[in-house]
Length: 193
Image (tube, rainbow, N blue to C red; front, side):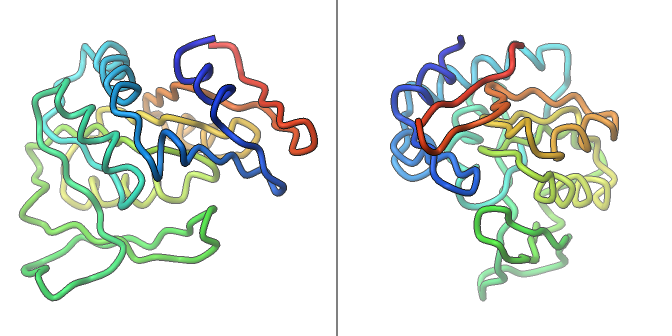
């Protein structure tokens, strides 16, 4: 069992509807020491890639993306879920459906932050059905940039997202893959990696 799986066992909570609450360390309160371990692990797994930018989606991916970026020495760009008055210039957009929030968002990245010269590592906290990742991949492709890989903290292996992304030919590195959960007992079962 790796460091993230151990943290999920100790601090995570399984809820009805295949919901894994990790808000005490990942996506509400953030355990920076854990994030540093995650960033170092992704640096190892993508050591052979030339990464120039890390791309994530607001809001839960931003913290882990920032710590991961320290390991690569590159900036983080995050896709916004709503247009604000301080966004200017041309934008890349994609529509994504959120598994957690059960709604469709149009995500936005200013064109000035992604170029055809960029080699992008996509980082996010969860992978369920893969819609957010497909939207981020579409934005990178619209920019003419290259997706060098995808780093996910927790993948729900019992949902289709991981298989869809791997079938697209991308190197997908999930630090914990949940094969099943039991809301009655609170148990989480991980895929061996």
